[in-house]
Length: 218
Image (tube, rainbow, N blue to C red):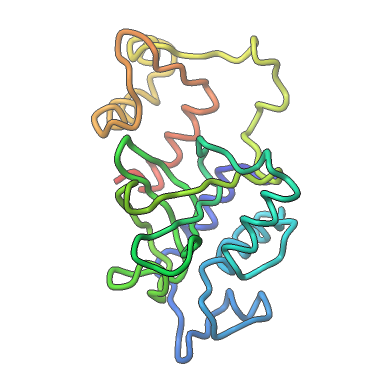
């Protein structure tokens, strides 16, 4: 099972990679289908490098989503978690599954992912691995949280044993290392609640701090 930290670390380590002539790249070469649109090959590669290859080996965004809907429908979720797969449906295209990336964070209005084969001039075929932030209304995302993705320690603790913080003051007093990250996320609108209602666990705080220190919340 891969953790969100592993998935995001591997994906972030590829930022800046790009394809060459004829769209040839290491992800396509690894997959065995080079010289094609490679956003899904990038996602497949990241999960495989984390030791948790996806159960549906495909280079097609639509084929992956259809496989999960038919065979593991519980993995198609409404609320994303870091490291999960995002399938995009951009407006004005002929497809419902235009592109894919790996979820980093979201606000009420935006979604941030790490994508393969994207770029400033072309969302879905731009040739680069980039960290992208898009308007949620434009992105129209669908989320896949594979069984192969797990959060650290959650499987080892009962829910009632997990420390949860409801306020910023509780975090400042009990997990001061995470307070600057939480304050930043509150300013961005990613986390809401000050007097009460934050409801974040110790494991989630560690993950958010890791994402912040990796520069993925800038």
